[in-house]
Amino acid sequence: MRLVFLGPPGAGKGTHAQILVEDYEVPQISTGDMLREAIRRGTPTGKKAQECMDKGMLVPDDVVIALVKERLGHDDAHKGFILDGFPRTPDQGASLDAMLAELGMPLDMVCYFKTSQATVVRRLSGRWICSQCGKNYNVVNFRPKTAGICDTCGAKLIQRPDDQEETIKKRLAIYEEQTAPLIGYYRNKGILAEVSGDLEVKPLDAAIRMAFSARTAGKAN
Ligand code: AMP
Image 1: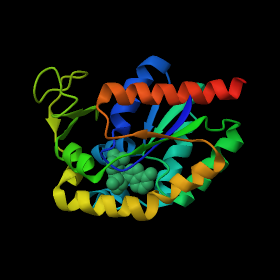
Image 2: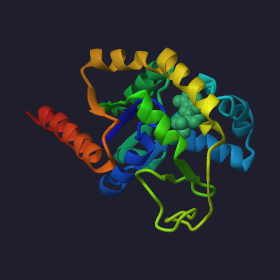
Image 3: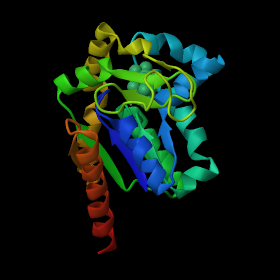
Image 4: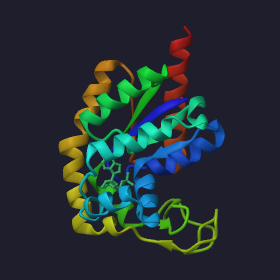
């Protein structure tokens, strides 16, 4: 399984990547999670990224491309991966193609989460993440077993600084301008599958699995 999850912030990419990786045993590669981890650890990458992230802007292409290139070289990524939040610009898309061609691992499918603005705003304002492991929760549709506590590691849940209303608007505008052109790019390559990010967790999970099965069955024929 080699997938890209594409769609606006709040579409459910992280939630559905977390669900699928458990069954398919491939890593979720989330550039947002990797950057937040770099900030927590105070690395040079984290220092470069923090200001852009806090303002809701994209981190420079060279920084995220280097992170993904390094991550795709790990052994666990050879079995497959779900890229969540990367690529986010046409230049990142072209770099990903080059990296995967070099590794001989072409993408199976790009899953585009088509999502209304109302859903995005509702989800982002209800989102909580684990302060330690970064796992995502949502008060609307993906609650932790104990309020405010991560199911996986028991640490405290926090709201992301970039999930404030003004920053959300900026992130959506940047998505439309810089990321949305990738939809046409992958459609032209014939690997785009569209699902509705407005669906609740269970039906959306089913839609993603169905799209993936249809795609892989098509390949086998
Ligand atoms: P996410 O967790 O995917 O919503 O990402 C949070 C923030 O991390 C974004 O608003 C960007 O500032 C930064 N970021 C994550 N992935 C990328 C990427 N592929 N390119 C540039 N910036 C990114």
